[in-house]
Amino acid sequence: DTAVSQTPKYLVTQMGNDKSIKCEQNLGHDTMYWYKQDSKKFLKIMFSYNNKELIINETVPNRFSPKSPDKAHLNLHINSLELGDSAVYFCASSQSGWNTEAFFGQGTRLTVV
Amino acid sequence: SQQGEEDPQALSIQEGENATMNCSYKTSINNLQWYRQNSGRGLVHLILIRSNEREKHSGRLRVTLDTSKKSSSLLITASRAADTASYFCATTSIAGNNRKLIWGLGTSLAVNP
Image 1 (cartoon, helix red, strand yellow):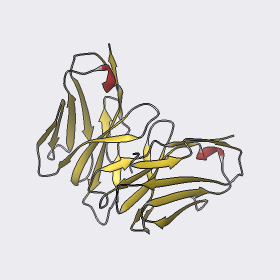
Image 2: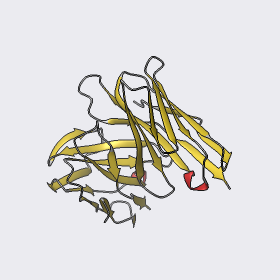
Image 3: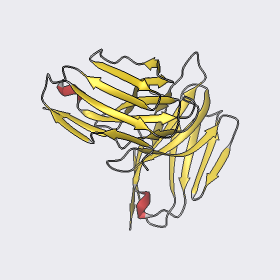
Image 4: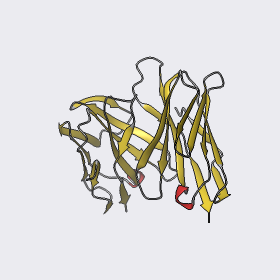
């Protein structure tokens, strides 16, 4: 049983397209996150939701819109994709926020061509 | 801004040797966490050490924390080829209303059989 699962694992798309990445956790955690990892492996928080409510929204272009239909799901929709959006995107969850261990999905490698 | 910085950036050792990685951070913290990332995979939590703890063990892993020097070290004893991965430290700051993990750039460890 996968604790945090995200789909798809690979996504290749053209500039200007709109795409979504889905994430689900079956751990019963209250908090979910989206991270972006660049080619140098730097990990940057994008969004954090706690019980379906947005609590962290870093300086991310508003082309990125997270949606949390329930506390087990946090999807990421990206409009008008740009070359610079190419990266690995990780979904993660934790029991009660930033002070507890985070469980990560396997990542979605997004390539914009 | 980046909080944690690991060193060395890359480490190559022989199987059976010990590997030590260091992490330095800038502001006072609640806790510090170490994660491992195998190539092409998500991050896996290894150890969380709280600011009032000085040392913690988990199997072949030993983590120390020196809050006066704002640094932590991760020691992997009797390394195995399967330990080959990138290792990241992440901190939670007590400053202001900060509610996110701040990540370092990671140490890339190669354990040669």
